[in-house]
Image: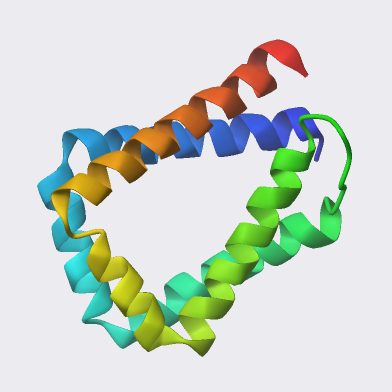
Amino acid sequence: MTDVQIFQILGITYLAVGIGMLINPDFYKKMIRDFTENPPAIYLGGLVALVIGCFLVVLHNNWVKNWSVIITIIGWAALIKGLFLIVLPKVSIKVCNAFKMGELLSVWSTIVIILGALLCWLGFFIV
């Protein structure tokens, strides 16, 4: 898989999630609440993040001075998130609960939209 394809896939995904969080905050607050009250969901969420992170780190662990380093950073972030969800679920629940607050959720959704737009821009127009 090329950097362009990874940028495109991650960009579309981040844009969709970010826009969804921004226009449906009540749904996402409920989803976070339900997630934190469901241990199998926490485990599976951690497993998915860990596997995606491992794939990105193993296949794309490039610490270079260009845009490709974003893929590496996202990979490491996913890997660390997965480890936290699996190894430290109680800490992860506390972090998730902070996102049920409206202001933090809207700030995070804006960050995710900006990152998604950047990744799409790189994947479809630049790289």
